[in-house]
Image (cartoon, rainbow, N blue to C red; front, side, top):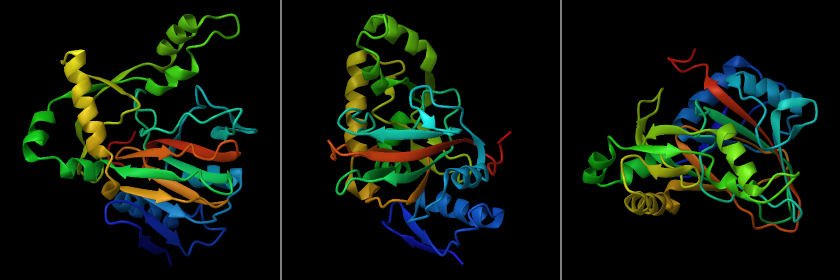
Length: 282
């Protein structure tokens, strides 16, 4: 029987009572899914899943994402992103973001497993977009209801601005703008399963508020970024090797702290695109 212990009132729960051989059990995954809907991010300490088990577990929840356009993958497992960082390869995920909101289909969930952790540092934080919406003044909710935001690859630009492999930074940037693409999403949206409203904004990938001048757009973006950066909406996880964390990427943001340089940190991530339990999932 699962033990589900909420970590904060707003977001996050730790799950225990899972046998090592039952992670791919559909009934267990149904329970985990319900916990995910309620708590938005779930933590399973020291799951110690092998890559093949990680993959089998993820496949219980829906269609997996294609190999990432920017990050490498675990050898032999094209759908498992390899996130390795140290002083020679510093991380680029130390900003509040919701994964891949610039893609045509915003992914449902991510499942992350810690493979190597520095002695200190390297925590990850998650923030509830439900809670951020709930805290908005009623007038502001009304003002934002019909606004849309432009999402693009935002912070990833930093990886393409320098000359490399015979291409100038301008050439590389123009090429990758088309590779990553854009999307336009409502600022206030509703979860496809729970129906709860949430603030659909993240500072890393929202680059413009549609219909506004750049100055007015930047002012609103700054307000929203500050509004969403409240500890009351957040949960912070100190990793141990083998920990598994799954989050609902539709209604959360996360921030991987880059405070462990020059030490090494390695994580494996699978992104689930379609939620097979959602009523409109094809």
